[in-house]
View 1 (cartoon, rainbow, N blue to C red):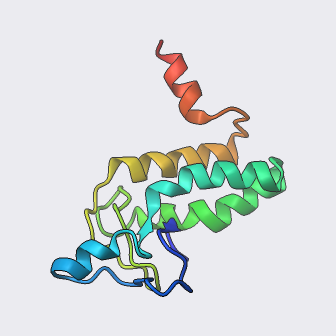
View 2: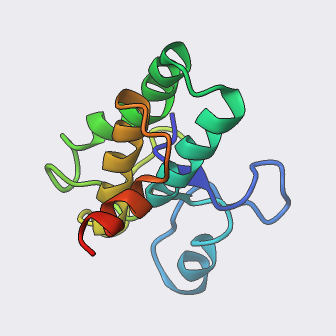
View 3: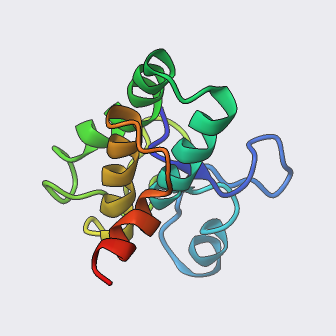
Length: 130
């Protein structure tokens, strides 16, 4: 299971499944299929809104989208979520192993799935400090 959203669909002709070492191919792969875990937060919030924000849907969302990220905390940068991963199994994290925005959105997705936050978590968090 990918740890986030692919930056390009697998059936696109420019799709790159692996973050290659070296030069132009590596730079081009960033937006040609490589998975960005930080996108999982907004995706899970949207997925819950579309599929019904109820307990069974939240459990399903957690199992499908959040659990793989939580498992990833035990790999690469321990206790952190990587910047990017390869788009295809085994979803190797070739980029930075410590990425704050990826970890943040893992937390947001966990909260969205388990605590039934009806409002945007980021908005609630920001407004609590104003």
